[in-house]
Image 1 (cartoon, one colour):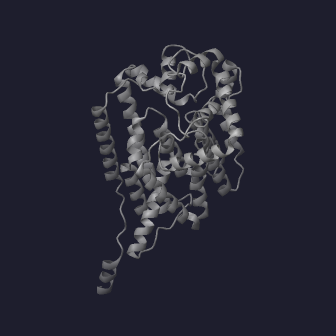
Image 2: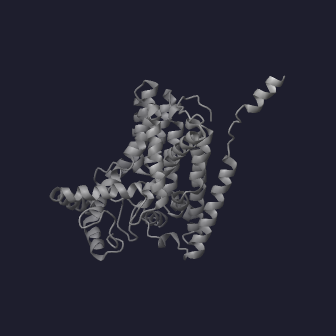
Image 3: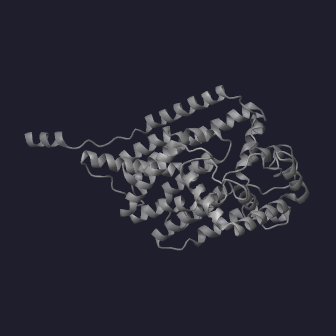
Length: 411
């Protein structure tokens, strides 16, 4: 009996989940920051915020269809995919187009952000242990980028949730039905944010590699579910636009005569010359002309383009849009340390490396607005939590967390 008691006394105590308190902290931090922001700044109706998705939503409400991204009637548009503008239009149909809509959309995005905290904690716990899950959840609850993201009336919070959820469920994609659902989910996600296309297809390919199969069904379902969007674009705009019409426009914004950022007062919504060009040439012609100007400049100035690309790379990973965000820079450094530590578990390393490598590519050559980087911050929180827990384990001389990628891992 004394031996049994002694053994029980020195047995390590299992780490408990602190998810409930993490969620409480996450909700409190977001509500307090939002209240402070609204109190310190004049709250504007959605139309006063200048977002193209809001302009399209207002056009939908006015009966002009999916059109007019720059706050003046300009005909059909494919400037962005339809998902979030349609969602915004739904909110404004219920809450009106005034301040109530801004508050309602912000509250919705806070909810998405809090759900993301839960998914981050559970995914980190599944792959990297309870301690890492608690740390990652806490980072996601309190780090600066996560608190700021809901204040943008944009698809940022929803896109971040979609991407980290895909990482969380990837090992469970094994059967034909799973791949069909993955293809459908990918199509819906890309109709919200086209930048998710290659990361999500990469995650599906990773799941197929583990299942030793070819994901033809996923690709077929994706093509069928996504096809109405490019078909609509061809029918209404008389051009093949599979994703968005604005790549050339964004290249132009971030390169000729730029410092790698979006120049102020250069959009057709606020610049008289650009407004006239956009109206006279139409969206397709305008975007093509800007793309041609950008490509010609890049061909003539390859060294300058390379320099700007390097600057955009740094600004993306430091969370900067003209000014660095120290919290994001710290999160990125810790996350890359965590990713390096994952090398001993090659499948998990590849799973996390896919979105980190693929998602930022368009922003390296255009412009790295801060809200774009927020989409991958939940993944950075998981990896940063792993790096910190590995360091704490080393300091305490206890075993480091062992990466686990089995499809039947506990949740």
